[in-house]
Image 1 (cartoon, rainbow over the protein chains, first blue to last red):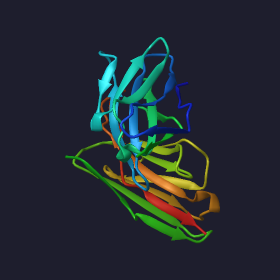
Image 2: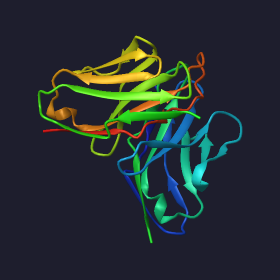
Image 3: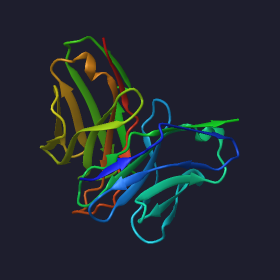
Image 4: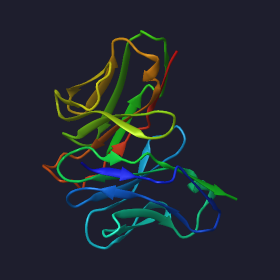
Length: 113
Length: 116
């Protein structure tokens, strides 16, 4: 069965510093990996996804994620954090077929001015 | 472009009362539709998903039910609400294209349900 782990409940980073939100996955076949962001009392917004090809995926709002097959990871990164990046971030995976995404528990990012 | 609507945005209901939440999608045909619940601002629990009219898959046993009376309409219902039904309910859609795993799910704005 496919699964996703986000090992950190909370990540704190100073404004202007680089940020990383961690995600590891478990699938039996090829993974299709997604990142979403959620602001308070809002729906989830799609940031980026890895399907195939280049291991570094670029997405919205300056975010990028690096797919590492050997470490089964898909960490979300941004070179310089903004206070407005403070939100709840979800990693998700789909293994194959026309099935719903499986989400991690979420990581709350707090960027401090 | 495609848009997804949910209503109401917020709802306060007494225990034992019925529930009906509605989700509609515009700008696409024959989408996959999903209902998720999010408790305490954290993880997402998949409740139901549908690949077509009248086709509903239930992921967890509960006192909730879902229906898809039209291609782009997805309804979440309950006959009698429990306190534990409180949460943030999110509807999502994705394109139905055979068995492509690459398609993104897009979420609606959510409904905040409080059961008192």
